[in-house]
Image (cartoon, rainbow, N blue to C red; front, side):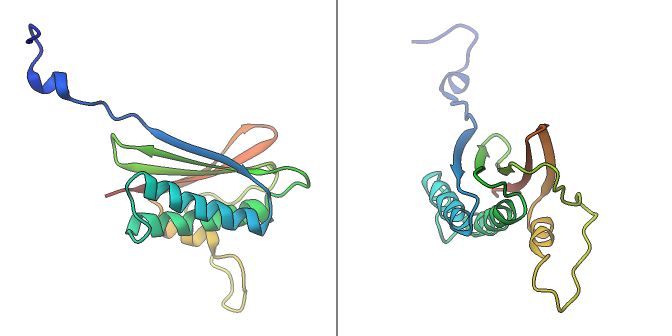
Length: 154
C-alpha cells in the first residue's frame, strides 16, 4: 500500500530514541564498584560488549565519578545516583553521577592542576578530562550536584 507524498524510505525509517539507565547506590566503595559493574552490563545490553573500547572507557569514567561521589560527595544516610543516557542520534553516551553534597564543588574543565608526584590521590578528574569529550558539573537544586561527562560511541 502506498501513501501519497511519502517515499518508501521515509515510511520504514525508525526513529531512535535515547535510552536511559538510572540507579541509586549507597555512598560507599562497594556502591562505587557496583556502579561500574552495572554500567558495563548496561552497555553490553545496549550493544557495546565488555571488551569494546567504549565499554572499557565508560567503566573507567563511571568508576572514577562513583568513587568521587562516594568519598567526596557523601552525606551520611544519603545515596548517590548513576544515570546513563545513550543518544543514538549523535552516537553519544552521557554519564551522570549525582551526590547529595553540592558544597563540595570540583574545579571546572580546564582548571585542574595535577597533584604532586608523591600524592596518592587527585588524578580522577584528570582522567575524566583526558577520556571524555565533554564534562562538567551542574547544580539542579540546593541539595545535590551532578558531575557528568559525554563520550562518543564511534
